[in-house]
Amino acid sequence: MSPKQTWSPKKVDIAGVRKISCNHHTAAINELGALFFWGTGVFGTYYEPRIIIDADIEEVSSGVSFGIAKDKDGLLWSWG
Image 1 (spheres, rainbow, N blue to C red):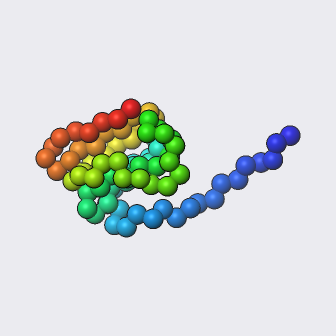
Image 2 (cartoon, helix red, strand yellow):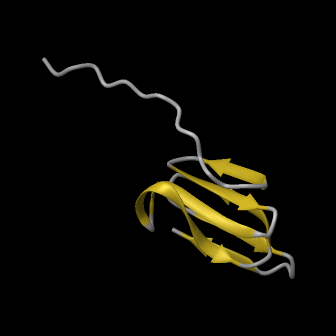
């Protein structure tokens, strides 16, 4: 019998988070418009947040294996 796995919350170090979206991966936009990504998804598995798009991102939505973000000019950025 395997030991029971336990999970505990971990602080995420991103200052000025404006928006967040979660599914199998998590995406967050900071106050400068940078899009951070962590968890499991098409970019791989990231245990710590990484900047994926360093642009003026305003909106983000995450699905099971896809995501989409909109920048200040109305352009869409998608992955998955």
